[in-house]
Image (cartoon, rainbow, N blue to C red; front, side, top):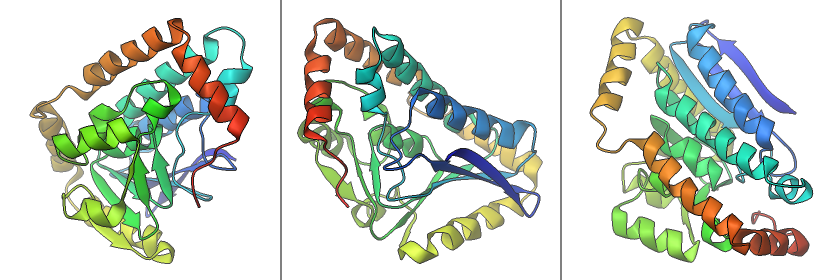
Length: 252
């Protein structure tokens, strides 16, 4: 359980999230993702990172139960800062990050995937940002990197999900494969990248980030400001309590 990293072929860092039962990450889990992704490129000298998960789904967002069971605002602030750190680490990783997504990818999971460089998904994968239903805001920045603007707004306002197969037509998911072939498909792309001159790939990653039309770090922090307003107004607490009391889980 937790965050683990395996170095394959001496060039590919496979970072795995494993927080049963649904990979809803606690505060330290988000910081763990950030540290693992940074370390992969900086200390393990990986040429590419594959971000994946064990269990029923890729990521169910933040651990709302932890947030509601913690007195005061420490867990809320921790989750916001932790998510920002994780998303930032993925986006600013000096080498390409490939997200290998299965099952559900919700909330913070979309933040990780939206900031990745390549997305490979299994045929059971689906994506969504249910923040409106939780009395919060965030990850619209990253959802907008997966779908066009009007579709993003509709998905955001309704908390609907979208299948990985539908994202292929938008160009944000490279490939959809059977669940059992997901890791191999991600590693195929990873090995293709790892075979390139790492000096050129690192320069290319920095260059592509430099011409990005949206500053994803500032954009996401702007969104988070409204989440804090909703918390101060007591709105977010009402929705999180309802979520915890109903025991809602991502669909299988």
